[in-house]
Picture (cartoon, rainbow, N blue to C red):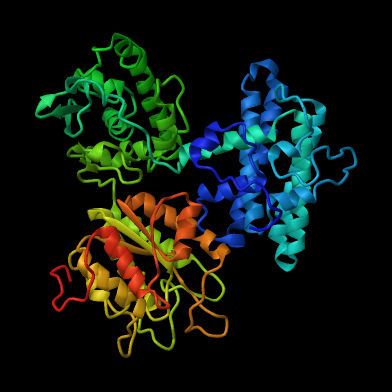
Amino acid sequence: MSGAAGPSLLRRQRSLFEDAKAPLGLDEYQHFTTRTDRNAKPGTEGLGFVLLGLFGEVGGLLSALKKKQRDKDAFVAYHDVVLEELGDTLWYFANAALRAELPLSVIAQRTPARLDDWDYRGRTGALTFVELQPPNQAFGGATFSGAVEHRLLALAGKVGRLLEDWSSGRIAENRDVLSADLVEIFRALLAAAEDAEVSLDEAARRNIVKTLGRWPDDADWGPLFDADYPVEEQLPRRLTMVFTERTVDGRPYVVQQLNSVNVGSRLTDNRLEPDDYRFHDVFHLAFAGVLGWSPTLRALLKLKRKSRPEIDENEDGARAIIVEEGISTWIFGHAEQRFPQRRQPRLRAAEGCPRIGTRLRSRGTPALAVGTRDSRRFPNFQGIEISPWRRGHYRPRRPYHRIRGSEVTDHRRAAQRFVRRLADSQFDDVFNPYSDACSDHDGANAPAIRRRNLTLVLEAALTSGVDSFWIARDLGYRGGRRTGLALTDEVHLPAHGGLYGDLPLARATRGPIVAERTATTIWQVLRCLGRPVFLWNVFPFHPHEADDAMSNRCHTRAERLACRPLLIWLLEALQPKTLVAIGRDAQIALDDLDIPAQKVRHPSYGGQAEFISGMEAHYGISAAPRAAQGSLF
């Protein structure tokens, strides 16, 4: 993203949450959207999805205004709802402009033009949200006058025009149409915010808090709620709860047992029409395992924190139990309506839960993934084994829960989904080894073989864990383009399989085996390291010159940003102890994510000696060539 130089803040999440004194930059916020972007399609390929979101959020603003005009004072949450919907609108707008390679600061420069009944009164050349609005404007609370209605309807009309231009193909034929539409929408958005007397800066900040609460940069939730309590008042760090279903007089009920001792009373559905609610205590186990919180389970296991009477009364008492039971009932009923086959809704938040709100917002979905299953499969449960607090903290996206007969953490499917996302990615002058076939060198079913290679490696890494994560620039035409594995040529394909035992990795090409100098140096070090390492690239494809498919070029910034969600997923899923950035491009990518990493020289272009010495210093090994290879390979 280029444009006028502005405050290059891009702060870590805590300063974005707390540092209200520093103005939030337009381009800073726009770049922030990439940190929570879950759209798998890169650049303008994913623009249609973003425009759907933009249209929906503007519709949310209209809906909030309609409710306020209808219910008046009864709609007490109007101000907060408007700020939330406005923040979501800003997110989709900023992300759409980013995909169109239009910085918000540039759009702001084009904004100071007169509408029929509105003049821009912000600062010319604004670089922050504060500067977009009139100085000293009072933001007493969102208004709902006829003028606001007029502004929001005009905004919706301009967004509708953008969607029409997109769907009709006018934007594809002339990119200037997209630029003009975005400027008009931004202008209408400023006018609406000004008449409604709401702060764009506050809306954007609240949006950051909301989205980072759902997809945080730092997966650090602090100590467990009972970490500083006596052992006899702590939730068990590992337990096996067995659900047994029995039937008496045609009426099913469930008994729970822990260590062969009944826990609680036997449960029925408490409903004339059976719906499997008798299994709902799985929610309490999931809350305990993923969130570290369950007043109900504490009561059942007699683990209330009585050493501190105020905690015992307020956080483990009857009201807290009622709140948790209410959440479980609401989830179950919501899922019954919306997800009759899966019963896995998303929990946005729950009011009245002491100290648990943040974790519910961000860890709620994984908790529900553990606690909700297809109703037809509930009777097949043999038991639930929970060991979520390994190493003292919950590790995001790698829950250590096991449901016998219905595996929650399915590493194979996760790996397959990830590789499918890779295969679906397309760029100009880029060879995608997971979907493209080379007519000169590939054998039969080459893309499928490479997909299988990567799936096997990723599944093994997810299952066994990895010590280190090495990341380089992009695939080379003599290495990863042929094998589908980063930093690995065909010579070292068997060695890569040996990293995780003995994976049956296969060759996808025909003709002589091809070696790559970079891979040779990489595997010289790996041979001496003797520990699991996951190898990856910032841009996990092979970029080449337009007129030479068998050449190497550096990926573009747009290509790197398009693959950023893939890298984030890998880092969150694998949770490596050590990150090593091989070369400057890898370091830049990790710096963008604000992730610390050990930097070493890339072994290409005469950098072999510096690379080896850097790895030797980091790991405390000697990577000199050996006559005999280690048993790992």
